[in-house]
Amino acid sequence: MSQQILDLIEERYIKDVPTFSVGDTVRVFFRIREGEKERVQPFEGTVIKIQGARHRKTFTVRRISGAVAVERTFPLYSPRLEKVNVLRYGKVRRAKLYYLRERRGKAARVKERYLSPEERAMLKKGKVQKEKVVEEAAPVEAPVAEAPAEATQETNE
Amino acid sequence: MVEGILGKKVGMTQVFTEDGMVIPVTVIEAGPCTVVCKRTKEKDGYTAVQLGYIPAKRKHLNKPLLGQFEKRGVPPFRVLREFPVGEDALSELEEGKEIKVDIFEKGDKVSVTGKSKGKGFQGAMKRHGFSGMRDSHGSRYHRTVGAIGQHTFPARVFKGLRMAGQMGNKKVTVRGLEVVEVIPEKNLLLVKGSVPGARNGLLVIKRMKGR
Image 1 (tube, rainbow over the protein chains, first blue to last red):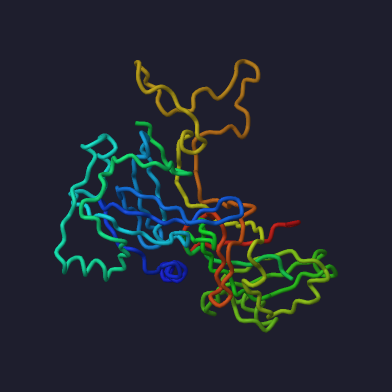
Image 2 (image 1 turned 90 degrees about the vertical axis):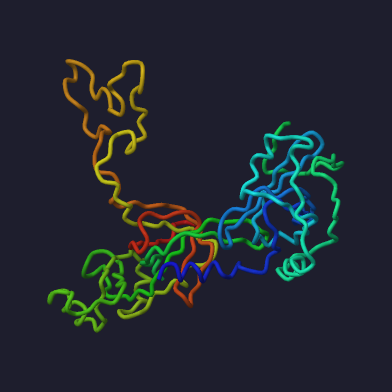
């Protein structure tokens, strides 16, 4: 009985969310507050972790900003999460890509997963909003000019 | 109005606010409770109401207790608790009146009393957070309390010294919890943070005074 009551509260937050998986390169559009103003801040990087269940699910995006690696964790069902664009599908063999933290430069790349048109269509149906799939997307370690305003976790590299 | 209600712990989850903050909440199924008895100044020397919660079968209650319910024309309840009310508020309340969770609203501060989960007989390290003794360097004294007294004077151990013993399974009150949401149709109350006890444990929820 208890679980049914909790479901009742939790299901209010369950909505269609973007589908992507660990290893994908994504651009996350997250609404942030700057004083009184609200704006959407994009954050681009590799998904290294998807954690949690139901409306508690979160995902962590890692990117290299200049010489500093930045990891940011977003709640997947947060009302502040505008959209997630998948820029590149990654081919990975584990659920958590913590090994990327020990690597840098060319070694810290994720192989691209090439999809058949059918597979691509299926993923699209699963609410993937794609800008354009960049087949030869810029490698992850490419220096990015703008520094993120806020970071959940920063690693000096 | 009565400033408290009886309820059952449902469990914990998290909710999002409109601006995207995540709040950890405990869901409490609170009420409906029924006023079973009034304590009056003339008769009892103080003013309060006795609330009944969870309907009981007649066969589970003894005759004296059943008589109390019958005398006042209210159905029998499993749980009875008294809540203090002012004299003015008492006159508005009648025996048999239902008290529902809508006495609270979002933003109220409440205190929640329950029976904590029993941990059994525990050592001083777990029960009181003592540091214990060293584990290595020839030590044969690992999780003990250590010294408990002084010398020839006072030549006794002070009362109330923290030592090993029963932990948990006792009444605990958490004060100042914020009401995050009230769902009157389902008799649900969402408070910020955790409350004592296991799921389905009985809770007494009271409004904090002066808040």
